[in-house]
Amino acid sequence: QLHRKSFDMHKALAKEHKIASFRELPTLSVKTTGRSMKGATKKCEWLDGHVSSVGLMDPSTAQVTPKEISNLFAKIATENGAEIIKAAVSGVVRANGRVTSVKLENGKEVKGDSFVFCMGPWTVKCEAWFPELSVPMVGIYSSSLIFKFEAGTVAPFALFCGESDDGTHLEVYPRPEGDVYVCGCGGSKHLPRREIEKLTPEQVVPDLKRVEVATKAFARMTATLGKDNPDVTQACMRPCTDDGMPMMGVIPGEKNCFIATGHNCWGILWGPITGLAMSELVLKGKSLSVDLSPFSPARFQRHKARRSRQMGDGETVGEDW
Image 1 (cartoon, rainbow, N blue to C red):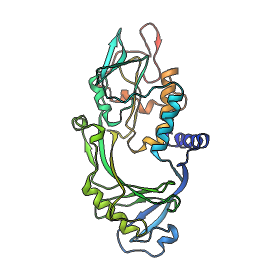
Image 2: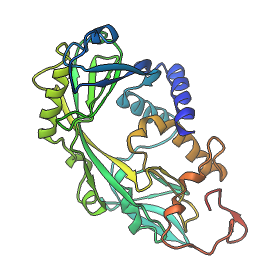
Image 3: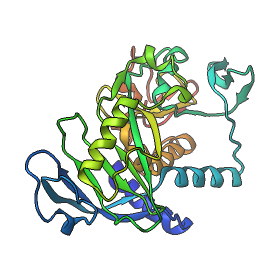
Image 4: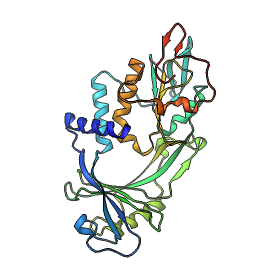
């Protein structure tokens, strides 16, 4: 339900806001092990290297460049009264049985009526702030590459490649602006909570050995696009829960705090539906656009609170209780 509804939302947002990097394109399944096939370039003109098989995986996938859509959402939010504060959160402040503000590492506090914690893998820090919350999550630490070309010069085909002898399982995404994004470099690390908490986002840097292996693997399959070195190397840390599903809903034991995390590699795709569903939950007490019950944080709850569907003086608290 998250895939389909958010895919449709992406299409509508791209049309409404004229998102230049959004486009539909086919996705191919590619193998590079075994004997090289003939005719790969008839299916994708830049697959002119060592390719053993090419097949159509899906004719109607789509893509959007994360930077463009993230900047768009930030622009829309600020135009509608939001303020973006760049700072690290170090805890929460409570009064009269509810959270009243979040503490920042610079010593300041940000007050509010409701709080939604969307901190990617660093959401594990919330366990120290909310006694009934458990966040069983690893950070999947992976490298990726970008090769730059002139806009419009790379035919639009996304690739999902099989596992190669070098440990890569490349995914290739040519973008409208000319960038070719490559991930699936192999060798990803699965970091537990204690390792995640040691890192800041700035310290998540690429594994140069995997960058070298992936660069060579990409060049083997495409002489046209392959280069000795990528133009950009980078890394990310994806938040993945123990059951592989996101955590979206009310934080157990809390009245006005919510969590949205654990989207793994689907963060961009699920972004619009997550924002809509969580805003409905916060403002109306229930998500109307999607059923959030499979993603309730309560499924990992440390201990069950003795609460009914109402708390305090008959206050309705939403579907995730």
